Amino acid sequence: MSRYLLYLLLIPRVAASYPFYAASAFFLSFEFRRDYIYLIALFFLSSLLSLMLVSFFYDVSYTAYALEFVLILPMLCVAIRSGRLWPEGAGLVAEFNYLVVFLSIVNLVVNWGFPFRLPYVHYLPDAISSLWGLGGAKLVTVVGFFGLLSLIKQYQQGRVVGKCLILCCGFNFLLPSYNIGIVAGVLALAAASLSSLDVKRVLVTGSFLGFVALLVGSYFVGRLDSLNMIFFHEFGMHPKVYSFFSLKEMFEFSPLLLLTGTGLGNFSGTAALWASEYLSLTSGHSRIELPGLKESALHAQFMAPALAVTVDDVWALSSTLNKPYTTVTTLVGELGLFMGGGLLWCFFRSVGRQFYSRYFSVAVVVFLLVIFFIDNLHTNPLFWGAFCIGVRGVSRS
Image (cartoon, helix red, strand yellow):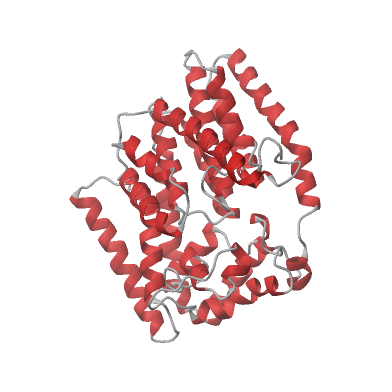
């Protein structure tokens, strides 16, 4: 069953693919039990009541709420520990990495002229994205990270690790150059390597990670030097700092929102961005037209001004580091301090209990903390599909 769900994650990324991605991520993360259904229903009713309360004072979008609720379901399922224990373990993670490498090469050949035109030379490495299009490079890195984490565990157990699989996982982890994911992954893999009592194995793993750090370090510094600074010049602070500053402003403007949030999909979540008039400038996609999907008043007041910098420079928010929102600020902004903070706490607590080794628990938590404080992937079904396959594969290696 899980193998077929994996194949759904690999279909080309177009608008019509999202229901298949969402279904795959949900079934990978959810087990049908009455107590889990009750918990999801409780979250649904609580968040809906909060939205209804906010709607008495501000214009909101119920369509955006519905979309965001569907997209956040996999994270909620992980938080309530409802994930399925599929029988496939490391083998499924390995297959995922092999297929992603193959599809990335197909994409480069068909769309980018590979091998006559090369990534890093003729175009950015973001093109190494399987068939997932813009932003797919991030997901390829996540798949590679869990592949390497699984290999470290197998190596520490004294099992034979195939060189071809090492190359495939390394290809996925490094070549797309999702620098945030690489930094998070190196820190996480370093933590996992400490679980071995064998000094030789620790030194081998540490040497590999040191080589990785040197390999990507110069390129990472170069990317930082070329980072678009128009947002900083406009607002006088880094976009990630602004994401917390905008929360502070919003809560000071209306203390009620500290308890209720703006409602799912009505601040900086995926559905809110889909409804934003600046979508085409920040993502390259056209604005989505659905009945009732509109820009909420609170998004227009506290988030849209930050997105408006793209009017003068379409590349102002092209980098993940330049986007003025994160998973943490989105959840707290849309659910309120207590519900949003509670969801994050339950999620990380659940993730930490997935592994028998505390080192591997720390590794995955570190990886996710870095991602959640910098990126906004918590409503991406492809991310959750990769996460669920990766976690189950590592925990059952």
